[in-house]
Image 1: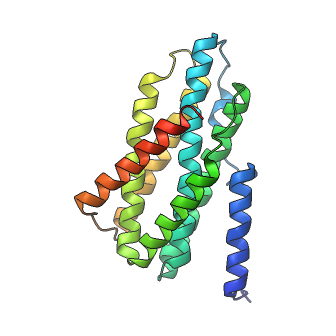
Image 2: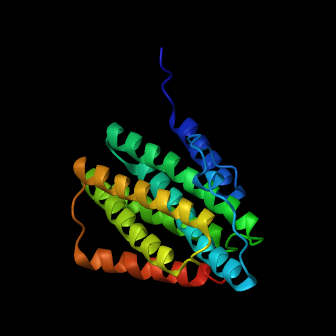
Length: 213
């Protein structure tokens, strides 16, 4: 018999996810890190710094994505939508761990503003969920589309010989595209242009800041 979880149970589970996300102990799907199968090339100081800065931005983005999905799942009305958001969050956890490991290898730290990105994104996600499931899924799809655009730009800026970071970003690119497509197929609505522009503005602030701190 499947256990029926109470509101308190769900809140505890979400609190556990918050702590795991920010502490670097997120639960993953168990997929292999794409960079593990790639030979590590020597990077000079400038190349390593640039790769680390780009990965810090991607890690901050994954922290925000976790918060968005968790906020949306808290307020989603439909059980199937909740499950979709939870599945996407688990797959994003893989990205979170991969980015953090690569940052460690490059000798850099994650953004000191990660808690702020998390709290702000949690509020945005919860608001999107309250707007209704079709808008929540549409928000998920638009978020992933914008993430794909960021990854495209990072792949262009990345040092040519940093094959480990490139392997991670290419797998993230594939996953994000899949999440966006799935959200649309499940009924995600096209967001109004002003909301898309607002999302881009918030994303720009986060990426510009986390590139440096």
